[in-house]
Image (cartoon, rainbow, N blue to C red; front, side, top):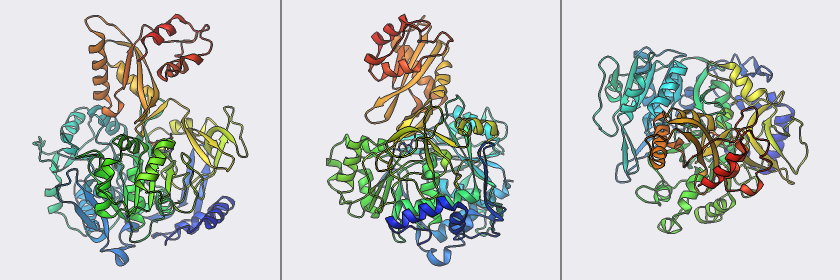
Length: 631
Ligand code: PRX
């Protein structure tokens, strides 16, 4: 199988070679793809300037590597199996041939509406096959897609459209999620009131909810594709042409557009998929993520399809119509590799074993987790009750910025250890540093996680603001990419991710900047100041705890808390709603006016015995009041 490491000793060998001679290693991997013109040089990188280029002057189109390269060998194989929200509704299977036709048709639609190479197209869609078709059609015509998770609010959507000056939005009338139906198009209409660059909106009919179609701007997907030919020649792209922008949260208030380019992303998403999941040609693979996140990009769409895999795409939620839904789907399609988030595992664990009982789950070979640290209890539950003790768990550590999985077992080869992401993939060189940037060598060390060698799918820039990319990732520790995560390397050399060391929290595997939530809270007219921290949450991993100073006139505390939650919902979306809101008389500050988040974190964690010395604060008396009112 293409680019696949077949056993543990092969892994160690590949790893050694990849570090000793990076160029040769990746050249060999990249040679397995179809390039219209091969590269002149494998890699050039300057971490000081945050400048990285791979397969320089190579020419290709990523969709030719999914379709044209493979249609003769597996054209009739299912590419996407789509499972609807409601199990009573019919599913859809698209073979590689059928998917290719649809991608070509929609590529022609994009072109007929003036989309050209380099234009930005926003995809704000539920988990329907058209979301994947839209991404691939953009890639085929050379447009840069930016998928925005359909749970984000109109104002979050507008911010992203404005930031990347998008020309088109691809959306749906509505979205079925569990028992709910969400009016997606309405959110787009609201967002577009604030945006001036959008020329056309193309709408997939999914829920048949009545929508307003603005003449001259809005078009129906089905009407457009009915007019389009299914013959299309892919645009020739440079290896370093932008493939997509994906917005993610950081420690400042404004989400940043992480830019990934064509050649390196293609090579690494396929390579990592193939190796981590050990996919075999007749396997059925299912990742439960949403295409609105990087996991959906790399491991529902690009990685699997570049590998000629069958990838399941699920529209719904794990608990609808009941908590056995995931397991029913596993049996229905005889899923071999199943990839989900710890938060979903913990949520299902809370329902006990009964929902699992009707299902055999005997097709499963590999289980995966992603997005946040998995606690040992959830790991064992997943291993024992879902995997029946026979499926290796690949705990995959990576980020939007890394484009692909960086530290993870290779299924069936790397011995696993609960809560450990284990070992780096070939080509990935993790370095642990202390707060001063001194490298902590050897095993049995703990510190901040950096990566010291470039890898093909790494972030190239933050859209429209290269300085921000430099400052965020390449300035903290000289000559290294800084991940923002804390990590431990144990006595066996295994890596365990300890969580973020910056002001980013991880709620149900979703990344949230505390400053971003604070900015939203501060929009409420009664709010004077706020501070947001994360705290341990049984299901979500971390919950959002907001300390808020308010002008209480004319409001009860209960009213105000609800209004604050509603404000965040409106400005960012439901995923950012604080779990706890505490109205406080003041926030603990240093003499220079900086909020002492350490103290707020301790109070939120209910660990007030070790607050340390608070006497040097500007307002030490406020700490007792905060402790008294803690929830
Ligand atoms: O803190 C790490 C955590 O998720 C962050 C990246 O979030 P995002 O860019 O949204 O991508 C999530 C999906 C790749 C990381 O900085 N994280 C991701 N995977 C793991 C993890 N923490 C612990 N274990 C993991 N396996």
